[in-house]
Image (cartoon, rainbow, N blue to C red; front, side, top):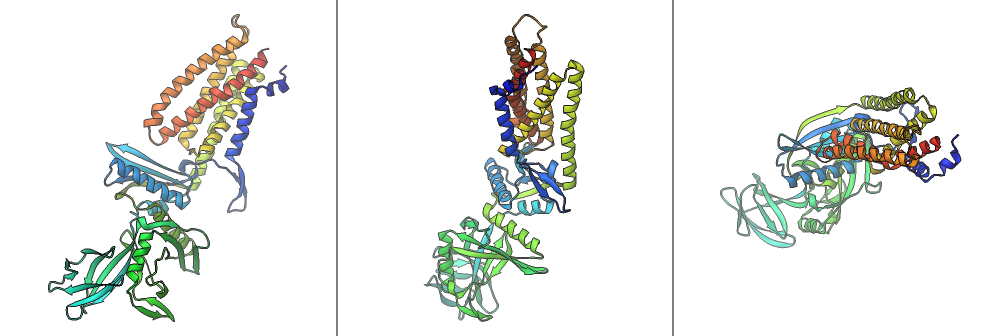
Length: 484
């Protein structure tokens, strides 16, 4: 008869119980209310799109150098993180000697993923300066300093002895100006670049600096960004010489500030006359939405792009597909059933082999403990559990049962004259050799493999390590008490 009180005081058993408790805390199961009003349970387990549903994209870089590949992954990770998606995977994949990036976003749809990654993310803010040229030349002030502007017969202009064709640029007082157009009324339109993507230092998301307003199909979002000191100085320089005008009883500067993302106008905002010539470290960005949810999604996407910055090269979406949440739930249910079925099948085989519940029950409990510890470790390090990881868990269960059979058979008193301790020591020599071989086979898959192969290899390695150093010693201690 086993002395359970004494067995539970063994250090190996205490270690297992402590780790099981920590695994449960890491997994953190908690109740949630579904849309249908029913109660279910969720956890901290990071599920891949195979389990939760979501979108997957394969991306090709126009200039796929190692540096561009690295920077692109960093930018995309920042975008997804700031967008609020926890379950994601972004990894490089080599196909036909070319590097691609595979992205997965669990719980997202194809439209959301496409909107986040297809944007180059080149953000600019410009302010136009319209200068009327009367008799062919004029002196205009910029940052309160005079500059000569002459109109040439070819339609070009000359600023401070520098000839500019349309789309040419010049730098005045540290600000780049582009010659945009010459109207029929001899008005020269210059565009001043006051903000670039690198100038955005902080994007506010709190309720005080980000808000939604509107009703029906007319919604508006608004949030605040903090600029670099250089951009704030440019804003002051460009606005210092603008004229004032009145609209709806309020005073504004004569030019708006245009917000441009990937060469597309996002919004055009009026500038209060009180900000003229002021070093403005914060500006507000606004935009529309067809509904409250649409406005929130547009704001969240724009905030994510501004926070992450621009991609180092153009990208092309080669392939995109989605897995519905319903199908993902079905995969998750099937995966759990597969794990339980594998444990049940092993239990039947073990019972047929030994016909002793005192041996079969510890083997089943040890396998269940290993599964719990693997899930707990994955939750702790935020490793994504997908179908490949489930396959790795099942492989670890099989490896664990093999080891437990070795321990059980080697400890049989009927075999040889060696003492019990020496028999168990010999069993662990076999187990360590087997574990070393398994890990050696999996390491190449972990280091050079891609996608699901890495997930399978990693989960298998974790399962083997947990078994060899935690659960196998505990099972051996149980067998030791049984054989006494």
